[in-house]
Image: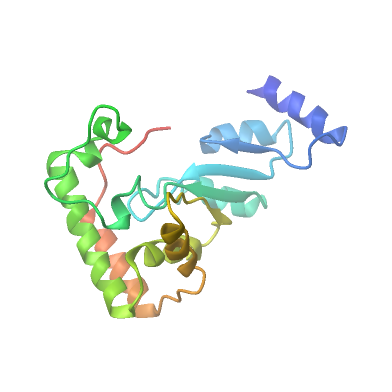
Length: 189
């Protein structure tokens, strides 16, 4: 890693790049990298049910003025609310490899989706907008990468920009997260 950081620092010093980032690195990786090359951004997955970066990496990024760009805010589509309890994933779909999309874990995750859907319904916003607004509101999150496969999905995603979550919504979401507990079978870095 240090050799890559050294080469990127050289490119930065020569003005061939304006910023340098690290994707899917741990706190230790980020610290090692930043000791050799100024780090502008870190990129990691983060969502309501996968918050592994919250206790260590996110505060470190804030303390060192490193932006945090997150992906998987909708947890590979789960938090978009369109999955059914009978849903299965073909071997061509990467979700079939994750325990979070199988058996009891999947059912518990769908229970969580229903809990947060009630918050979205109370606020009169699409579930996706609620999930993205919550993610963007988390301290230390600079940007949220979200995909879309249609103009309609783009429009719904964009509603998150103007979606304001009241204190009650934040409390209800926090309670749902606490009640759900740790997700098994998430992506390991």
